[in-house]
Amino acid sequence: MNIIKLRNYREISFEAAKIIRDQVLLKPQSVIGFATGSTPIGTYEELINIFNKDLITFENVKSFNLDEYYGINPMNKNSYNYFMKNNLFNYIDIKEENINIPNGLAEDVEKECEEYERKIHEAGGIDLQLLGIGRNGHIGFNEPCEEFKAHTHLVELKDDTIKANSRFFDSLEDVPTKAISMGVKTIMSARKIILIASGEEKAEIIRETVYGSITPNLPASILQLHDDVTLIVDEESGKYI
Ligand code: GLP
Image 1: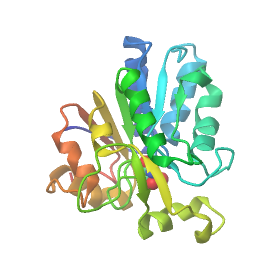
Image 2: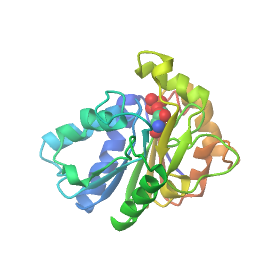
Image 3: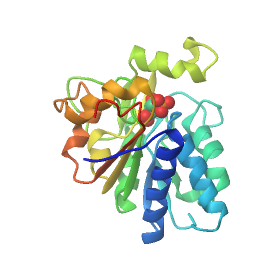
């Protein structure tokens, strides 16, 4: 694992955006995997700045998001669909038809998951996947459990995740209890992965991700087996590594 330790959130956002910029410059038709949560917001702001300076175009980029809440309308302000539009897609020139986010309203979830995998495959696989990390070590919505789930699947969210994510909702009861998420193999099949983390509350989970045993109880630990992972941390989240 390639570890980049920087001073603060601004610097990690800048660094992650730079890696995405370079990927798109090198291969304009890149397939990029995007993440949600508060951590990537700075990265997206920086990407928008880069785009506004005419340094990059997303015209030929295809995107696949890691996950989406299940049972939530894409227009709902807490959907990841809404998040991506408002934090990135509305401000760059990515084509609507090239944006892929699991459909949280799919009636046939199994079919939706299979189709999502097929679309990734047909796009040629993910060139660069951006990841955040949950407080319990989840990546996408792959929650700690007894066995790694390989492909895109429906997840039952853990109580600690529901609680952590409730800060975006009006009340705890409003947080969906399920989500559709890329699986661990889907994520690990990306050619390049960037994991970003910020703040003291991520310090212990980052230490375990880097030095702990590889276990589905800490899904991010599987990243130790990937050939091209760059972990970008600030001083606080990186204090034990
Ligand atoms: C959600 C997302 C994850 C994200 C995590 C951490 O649960 N499904 O992809 O990594 O939140 O979020 P934050 O960056 O807000 O700590």
